[in-house]
Image (cartoon, rainbow, N blue to C red; front, side, top):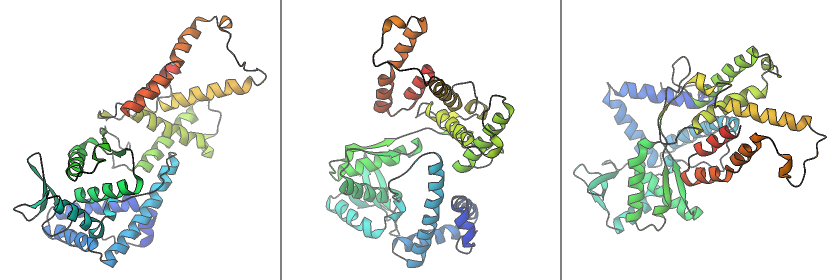
Length: 344
């Protein structure tokens, strides 16, 4: 699967999946042909050293990828101010960092000819013996550039738990370089979602996953006699419900824990799901709209609130600040989601 020779239209229309397929195919070939890995290393080395052909091709793929990502992010209501790429850092950016590391006397060469840094009696490689860079040194260069550019108070890396050692090394090396902000970078870990695939069991991309959620919700809407929209007309509410179900199903979990994904649980219209929260919101909005002649008082008269449920409701409403603060301090959305489930 040669991406260079593939029709441009094919890659442009489906860049992320095409790149993924190429990655899988190349790794499969490499299992029986070491020359594949040698060629990949050489291409990467030339890319880092400024080879125009490879650089332009990389820019080409990157542009298509951004366009595809933005479609998906827009669908779930996410917008980024800018995109930064770890692979954007080549020898031009990295050589000054290597000089800083050499001047700080933390850089040595191991028996394999690699550039390494010693951390807690471990030798951490940052450069290969052929002079090409590893992920870690590119991340060091990126962190230094961001500190200079943004003067941030804190910088958060939201990356799964398997990368814990990488970010520990990143933070330790920056501390060795006496970067005053080294302790202000944080790795926000999260666990794995087990079984998160389409119902056909194939590898899944987020957009395909959301498409399947849409189709399942659409079928549920068609079967319910209480549905007030026509699902056959691709009403936007169908997509909103599917996306809400997927997001809430994830946010209600403890961030660090692995969990099993189950379609029936996530899309349950009566359980603790995003669909149920949307339904409750619609009910409240409908009550408000149908009581347009009611004037909301500026002050509350407790003597008028005689129903026993009122005390419980006030108690739960009063817990809102506590839930927000807990979510903020722990970076765990589950506290706020649990509050919303209790409130409904």
